[in-house]
Length: 127
Image (cartoon, rainbow, N blue to C red; front, side, top):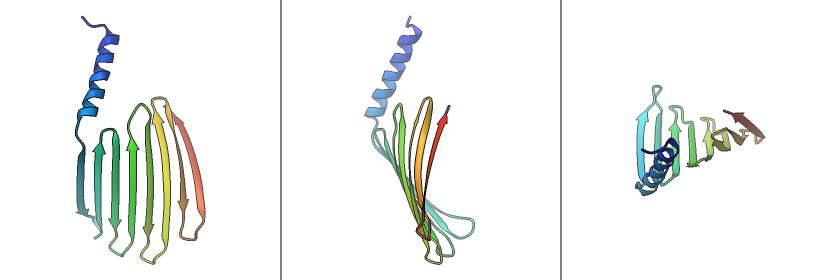
């Protein structure tokens, strides 16, 4: 009979082998929104690296685009950048980087508004 520690290590090893051996996968979809806009999203995976993008278009001509890349592991790390434009042509953009582990995480980001001012933020949390 296997001890609890050996069983846990066996399961962890099996998960690592399964995740490394699994092929890359992708998913993509587009749908209409309730107010006449459209949203499309694509997500792909290659090993423990996930990438995704989202595009939204509003009925009045506004748009929003975001791109993300995440690396899964003991500490999950993600990086996201986004930008958009309103129907009046004013633009905004930003980015965010985060890392989350079993005991907590950190996130830092910036946002640049239509007037060109940039705001920075930082957040830390514990589980």
